[in-house]
Amino acid sequence: MSFELSSPDDDRGQVGIGTLIVFIAMVLVAAIAAGVLINTAGFLQSQAEETGEEATDEVSNQITVDNVVGVANVENTEVEEIDLTVRAGAGADPIDISDATLLYSDGDDFEEGDINDLDGVEVSGNEDGVIGNGEDTATVSLELAEITSNLDEGEDAEISITTADNAQAEEFVTAPDPLTEGTFTF
Image 1 (cartoon, rainbow, N blue to C red):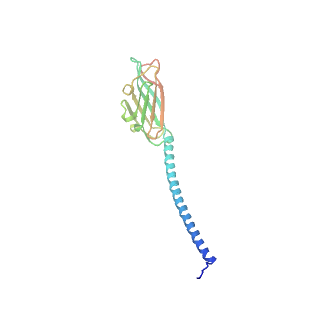
Image 2 (image 1 turned 30 degrees about the horizontal axis):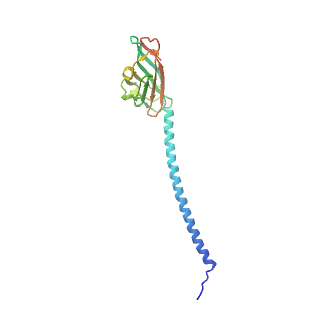
Image 3 (image 1 turned 90 degrees about the horizontal axis):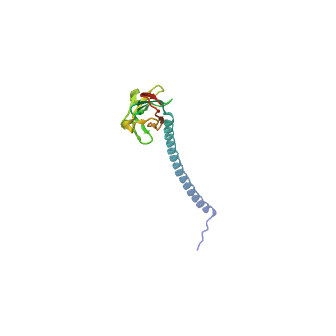
């Protein structure tokens, strides 16, 4: 019977191979984790850019209401028409008002929808409602009887226009009491 004794040098080789296998496994796990982190970072960056662009459009593509004019019929003591003159805010991209959403509420009734689809609402002026620089204006005319009902003396109404970029302009109007026939400024 012969016994073979392993030398300490043989054991060191086996320990070295085991250590190498563990090291390679750790490198592979780290590489996979790095790949996942890089993909996640890329996704988050593109999502942040998109959110930033939407927020910038919402803030910079504002519209303002320059003037609100009513047309009254004294016989019925009612406001029959409201005309809003709107313009794009400073630095805004061109805004198509005819693509906006309108909300009209007189306290009792309300109407909401796309400006082009609402009966009694018409957009006129600068290239059918496209406003771009600070000098371009468009007029949004509301025939109240076709929307909900005419506005009586002393009654309030809220008008809100929301653009495709979610920029919003709101106006609160009160019909004068007493009304005089013709046009007036709210």
